[in-house]
Image (cartoon, rainbow, N blue to C red):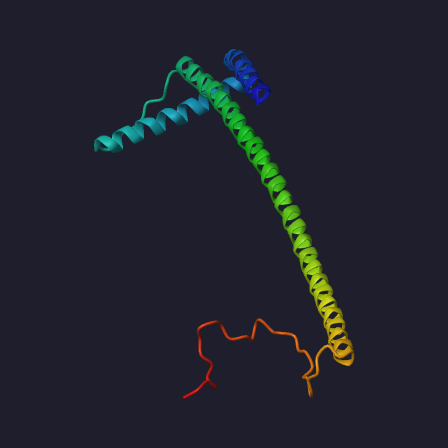
Length: 190
């Protein structure tokens, strides 16, 4: 950024001697001189007409500038126009460079956001896979423990530990459908 500003300053500094050279060339060359005279006369007529219209005076015949004054005014107008064009071009170039760097920065941020979204999506998928795997392991372990417990009860009854007739099979307790403590069920006493 500092080099761009230094470049801008250098171009502005070089534009001033070029504008002075335009003034000198306008006074020396015939084609430049005729261009300066016609430019200066048009500017002068426009200025006088504008001034008379603003003052509310009636339009009058505009006497042309002298040739020397017209050449000088035209050369100054060309030189100032050149300086203005250089300054405008530098401003446009700086604006373009700035917008290009902002676009690059926005694109980089968008790419990072897309990458993060992809990573989060992958992590969510992995968490879902691990959750499903854990549910499967827990269900398998519960089934195994149920079989072991049923076998222990069966062996204990055959071995004479307990003499109970018509023992119901053991069922797993479902916590999700279980009534909460302190709340009477609808099938309770009336």
